[in-house]
Amino acid sequence: MISILIPTYNYSITRLVTDLYQQALDTYVDFEIIVMEDGSTLFVEENNSVNDFEFCRHIVLKDNSGRSSVRNKLADEAKYDHLLFLDCDAEVCSSNFVAKYVAFCKEECIVIGGTAYDPDEKDPRYSLRLAYGRQREASSAIDRSKEHAYHNFATFNFLISKSLFDKVRFDESIRGYGHEDTLFGHQLHELGYQFIHIENPIIHKGLDDNATFLRKTEEGVLNLFLLYKTQRYPFLIHESKLLNSFVRVYKTGMTQLFSTVFIVVKPFLQYKLSSPSPSLRLYDIYKLLLLCEASASK
Image 1 (cartoon, rainbow, N blue to C red):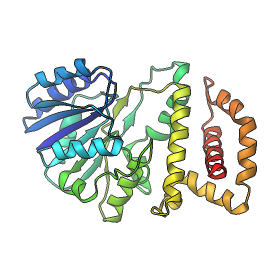
Image 2: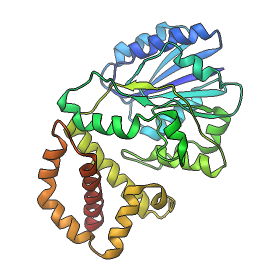
Image 3: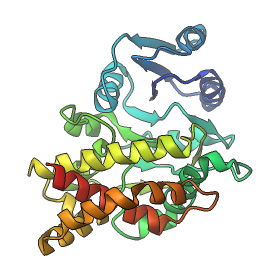
Image 4: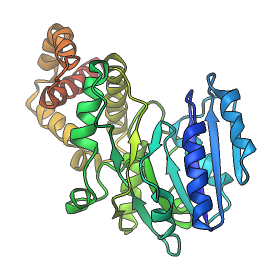
């Protein structure tokens, strides 16, 4: 009935699989859990213990195939009609997490459970990631459903019918970090499918420190710019507030000026964004300047 699919990269998966396995057993439905290492070099031997669980498989890809490709491969390996995709750096925080999704496995659907953050986590090394996660990602099902429910689609925690997944799949031409989920969500919306938002979050545990998160931000912004430049995804201008702001700046002819200013202020901005209480408004400005820098350099 349900295939639980977990792409993994250099992360210990044993606790997550153990919790999911016990909950899946308690539902008394057919299930499987598939963990796929995407070119991992760490925790591979430890994670191999997944094979000790009945109905569970641990698959190791020697080379890193990328975020889109590994999810497509997982879907190809799945044998049941509904696919529950979870990121590896998650922690189950409710006793009926799997059961809530099983309730939707009698029909074609796309169900998004949401993301949560540990309220006791206060380490300043992760201040920017925590601020972004708590203020931008950890929203209720009601808030997620209010407007443009398909915007900011994330692969962290969602259920989808295999029949729907096979109509779209993740675009494997997208390389680098970021926005493959944005395109996936948009394609589903364009085909007329509705997103169901429910209160069924898992805790995001694998936090990036401030320097790493800023580096990934730069990678994600560059990937967004490259997608925009292909002219294959015109909808991005309307669905990405960041890209929309950039286009307005670009039309004024000031991207080169902004890029030059950014060279001077970038270290200061990174310092402020790594503070114990970073401003997300400043973070948005930082990303806009990154786009201007990418445009000027190209």
